[in-house]
Image (cartoon, rainbow, N blue to C red; front, side, top):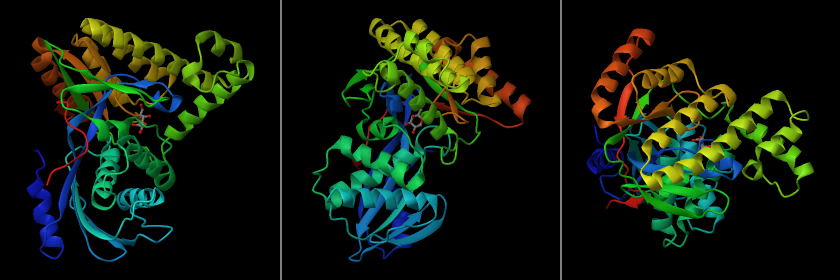
Length: 386
Ligand code: GLA
């Protein structure tokens, strides 16, 4: 069910002093291709979805933030001046954003807030980036005269992950949440920050997510280890080719040259990243030509790489990918960080119904639970609702 302003407002009124504040929304995201490339300075191809987080905020005249999570029915109060912040991880996202905005010179004051989301948690659709972005956007509007530019707001969310949650993520999720635009994917160069909107209306095809309902959780996951592997290989290449600053600059020949000096595991990780770099470029070309068969082929190749070389898949996701292949679906792959969550599928309209039914039946037969089907509609980025 779609989350509305009223769902949040009614709880805000009930939970606090009966008055209302300002309401903001930020979405989750999909990513067509370009996975685990953002922290390697590469390209990504995300778009915002219609599902996301909605938060209501009102200044309360103190130095404290009083926060209520409607979904978790959990209440936390923390001081803006506390160094350590709250323990509950959902509240640490809000705390981190407040502290990072303050560090940028925004005179954040205490506020009451309630929030809820309809982007599934742990599905690889960036519910956490939606949470960070909604507060970064709101604080900029309420206390900062909107002086902080949007890319910096995205970086506030990313810094929150790094410093307050311990996830050394790239910029893709927060970027997509802040900059999303209905009907458009975005091709972002994660090194320069340059991006362009890319109208996405694949005639005759649908994008559909299949949530394996295996909870993907980046906090404490081997996500950071994957990043370190990439950095080690880039550093080894850099010794021979000083112009190589990250795997974005590396090619197959360079990887071959350092193969004996890095671990086999690190070399496999780098192999995936260099391959993914090429696939993103091929997909850009194919999209320009409306060649969705090539887009789909690249998606399958990405899945293969994420599963075999990057090793961020799981049996459920591999099974969903196999089912898509068997059904003749144009493209399918793990989406997001991996370790659970969704596959993203590019499905021709005539196959859609049979594919969805097939997936539901077979997944249930094998794993004893229903996968969740989510039709993708590309929505808008962070915004004020009222
Ligand atoms: C997570 C991270 C992103 C990105 C993806 C993988 O969603 O937050 O920065 O690295 O994984 O592409």
